[in-house]
Length: 114
Length: 114
DNA sequence: TGTTTATATGAGCATACATACATATAACGC
DNA sequence: GCGTTATATGTATGTATGCTCATATAAACA
Image 1 (cartoon, rainbow over the protein chains, first blue to last red):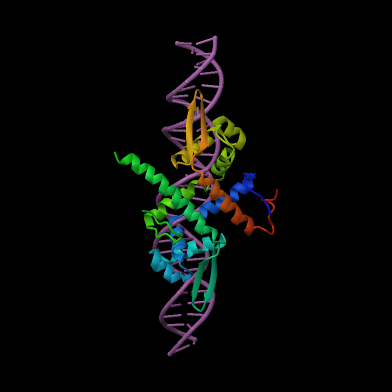
Image 2: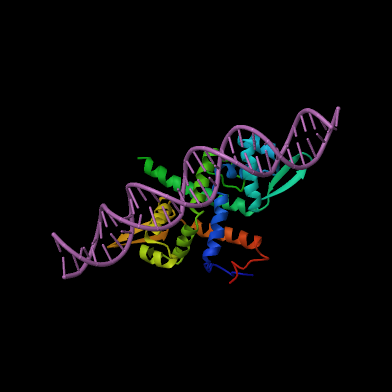
């Protein structure tokens, strides 16, 4: 309903700042590891601590960051809290970046293989 | 050789750190403004300074960052240096994030209104 | 009530990075 | 050569953010 087709968006500096902040949420290895661990479905904090090898404090902090960015949902059940990916565009984002990096490295390995 | 299907990737912590680094390049408003200005095609540093309103020093530094991340190409012609987007996946990345943000702010969206 | 378990948070520290000022390099014209 | 223009870089500084230790909350259970 908004942009019909491939016309490039015209974005304000304010919009750019918002987009940058969203990217910055994804710009941390531990947060990406948490998202990756959640690709298979929702998990409790303890499970995520075990899967990622982080400390409980740190994992909790990053889960808060991801939740505030509306990338995760939070569900409390008894003593445990379960987190799950709420924004499916994250899968596509990671696929895009992975593909781009693969191309970049295949070019570099061409350079290195001499 | 590479996974052809839509099966979720299995990524090492090292891979995750690389992906995070790529996201961090996009996690700065001024760099996004530079990329946005380059959506229409290659431009000189001076043009980018005028378009973004940044200082020459700062624009030059960010262009270096983007070039080292293989997102821009650099072409020198006389006194001027022209930069252009070299990784087309950047367009899709920004489209994905913009779309996700539009949904998130669909009610109070004034920033994205046009 | 008190204890245990699961998760969150306050405070302090360390590091990374964006920005600005001044200066350096490089290419052009005279 | 000299000066001018376009771009890059060394250094310093302020700010943001990730990490950790200790402690706080909250729910379950005896």
